[in-house]
Amino acid sequence: MRNGLSGYNKPSSSDLDGLRRVLGPQDVSTDRYDLLTNAFDAYPGELHLPDVVVWPETAEEVSLVLRLANEKRIPVYVRGAGTGLAGACVPVYGGIVINTMKMNRILDVRPLDLQVDVQPGVIYDQLNAHLAPYGLFFPPDPGSSKSCTIGGMIANNASGLRAVRYGVTRDYVLSMELVLPSGELLRVGANVFKSSVGYDVVRLIVGSEGTLGVITNATLRLRKLPRHRSTVAAYFDSIEGGVSVINAIRQEGLDPAAIEFLDRIHIELISKHSNVLLPTHECMLILEFHGYSANGVADEVKTAAEILKESGSVQIELPKSSQEEQRIWDARKAMYPSVTRATKAPITGDIIVPLSKLYDTVQKAYDLGKRYGVVVGVAGHLGDGNVHTNWFTEGRDTDSWLRAMKANSELVDYAISVGGAASAEHGIGIEKKDFMRTQHGEGLELMRRIKALFDPEGILNPGVMI
Ligand SMILES: Cc1cc2nc3c(=O)[nH]c(=O)nc-3n(C[C@H](O)[C@H](O)[C@H](O)COP(=O)(O)OP(=O)(O)OC[C@H]3O[C@@H](n4cnc5c(N)ncnc54)[C@H](O)[C@@H]3O)c2cc1C
Image (cartoon, rainbow, N blue to C red; front, side, top):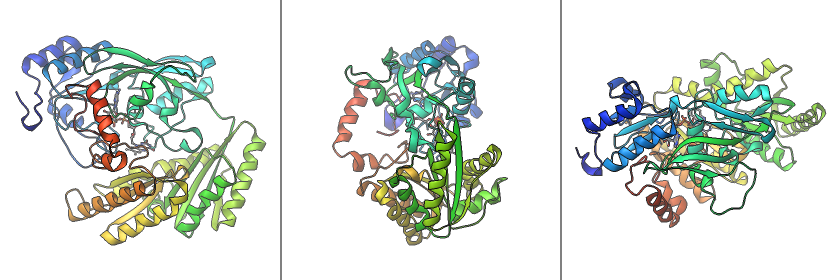
């Protein structure tokens, strides 16, 4: 049966039988509850039900599902944990959702190579818990680390709290097994730290939001866990002080692993909705330093504390135990859950700008909030230029929602105009598709040609990103 406008087909009952033969009936569902729980991610914008959800366990099963879908022109959406904030796994045209949660095995840790092989449904925190006894870790650390999958992180080029020092997911993917929409299975990349052998397909797939192929296995580069680490929390009574000091710290040549920012509205919400009580000030910074020697880390902390004080910090906390440090990081990770308890449908912004434009951008967000009459809070990984905003709406499809959407769009345009990007880590999904042209100009046509080369029938994640 045709799906109307899109020209895609719905799976027929014989297609559903075909899927059950491939996967077994237990891993194919048309149950309404399964359709509903696989219909959306953390982006509150749109809800579209798929026709069927499948839970493959092997690359061969993924390949057979895609082969069938490609022959029948049935849309397929790949889903990790569904924590994405841009709607990148939302089944806009219905069809099949491939849920990777059963592909959750850590296959091989090779400590001497500093590498691990994983299936895509492995959860980030579980991977690092498994790696810790080897003294290893996979650094990107998104705020959703307790639930997001490695496949979702690769497809979104996720990053997070420690990108300032360690970089983003893209910097850690050495090779991957990929199933193309035709069902063809191939391995791209090489398990070495550098290579110079033709096009870098791995880097193309990272950040492609499931539009080019399904990742069924990946080899990740790892880092040794730092021998010493130290956290610093600093509070400011002015936004300018709290933002400007970030450049002062980086210009001094200090190399923090994290520089996180929370403004007053987020500080108050965390104190209200989590079990951590923070002192109320205009904003706070959380810094973490990693190093090989205790003295080296202590020196960096001392210099950072001096700079923070000189820049107007009114209170500096230097936790004395790992429990105290954990308390501060728990507060940071409680930020988004606290926001969602305060408002039904927050619009979460994610832009990145050059460091020299950081303060102007934060100020622009507050100005837009005033102009559009929407409460806005600024938070996030400011240390690398990544500014997150939470626009507090009175629910979806309300007047405040529309005003917040406009304000957020203007902020994205501003970021691009000062040399930044429409998204630093959450991706484009369905939320930010309109900005692809502004960001890339004619480059967008090249991307469309690449998409057509990988996916001539356009069955993979249609309506997402491109
Ligand atoms: C509280 C909270 C905090 C967050 N903090 C951060 C943060 O600090 N940094 C950050 O970067 N993001 C953050 N996010 C966003 C999100 O968690 C990340 O983008 C994460 O990487 C998504 O992983 P997922 O498994 O949930 O993927 P999903 O949301 O399920 O999917 C994301 C994209 O990946 C594709 N995909 C999934 N698996 C595969 C696969 N095997 N092959 C091909 N494509 C695939 C999907 O089709 C989709 O396009 C946060 C979200 C929440 C809710």
